[in-house]
Image 1 (cartoon, rainbow over the protein chains, first blue to last red):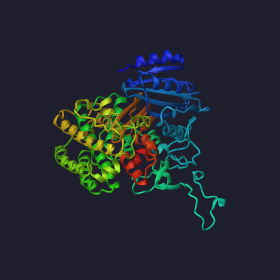
Image 2: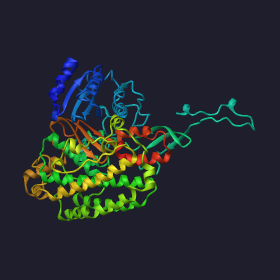
Image 3: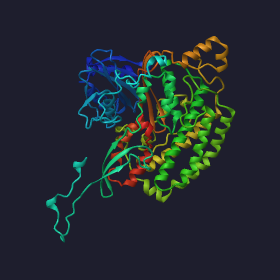
Image 4: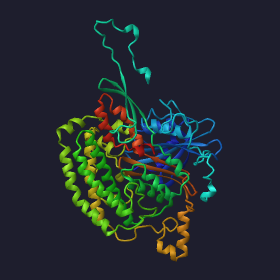
Length: 166
Length: 410
């Protein structure tokens, strides 16, 4: 059984201060890295002869409009099936430069997950084979999961928050 | 798309009477969006070389309902109804998966009895899910009878859902913190009876298919995938196990007391359609084993956690006690603030690892909720799996993958 501490120490040894913000919410090792280092980090975990973190469980985005300079987060959930060890990696991106290298060369399943993240947050995955919208229509000109788009149709005034006690 | 199709140029046209030159020409074929054999709205634009599929292009999102966005405005208990509508063949698993995610965030300990009831309902849901998948696989390969035999048992499972939660398809079963009501004696009787009456039906179903020459010819070595490719494509659940990887969330990361039960994880070898079918059949037997064990050892005690801020009080208390009335009001109006936190919780859904990634900023609704939908992830492999095969194979591969449109599009 791998321990969070062990993996964290190994990552710090290899990537020194390129990996930071280690924490373990509900026992899941979580840390941040930069977009320059995300692919090397994933690659290192993938090719590591002992850890073998080869399963990409989930890839998604989050929007934090309040965090200046780090408005978007791309979150990777990885799983080492050999050791049953899960970890979470976050990469924060500036809203004016939402580019991050694609992980499709490592995991085929990243293809649609990246397309979904692009579809909803507008995060550009550089090198992705076909970065187009996946769930929404092609003609859409905004990224609906961003926090600036309220849920209800803004043109309707019969659904204002006050009427719903919000 | 159109530039891959070669049309015979004018100057290549043969004069009348001459032997025509053979030109390989690809045909574009639309499989879907509405096709009776896709069981949902998926579009596959296939390039065909005669009978053989050369490549495929998928279009999804036809029933996208923006659940993740809606969830950002809803109190936690109202999100359960969204999860119903993802994998609608096994809604209780989605419901409990969501409840367990929230309980993890709130750090609520659910009593054993509620956990066992959840296990029973989740395994019934798994049986219902696999019944539909395998029955439809039979229908798509030309054997309608087996589907009708098992469909009746699914109806019985839905009656048990009704007994437990009052609904059939969109169950909204359970509450954050436990179950909304205890298992009634009638429900227990029905489940007991089911564990007796289901095995002969499943046996008959297996007899119809397992060694059926036509069925074997249609499914063996059709749509096979190696374990490496399956893992690369993020396969989970029965589809991954059919490829020979014994990954099951119930065993790897036990939740809701799954560690108390004795059951096997069936695995296949070649990951083809036949293996997927057999793995699902065997999983139904294992689910029955779990249900029997859970019923035999059903612990006494409360069926909900002692968490008054999150679990609705009993109606008679609401009418008589001030405290209960306040909690009732606050819960129903969604005025309970959740703690700050970040949770990933996975359950073994009907077709794979169903994950909930919940980020809470301390508000009344999730700051961000992401559903890891297994069929969204593994459906990407579909063009690769049907390359070089015929349309009729493509249809049964899709049935055997158990892609659920509601879950695919969320």
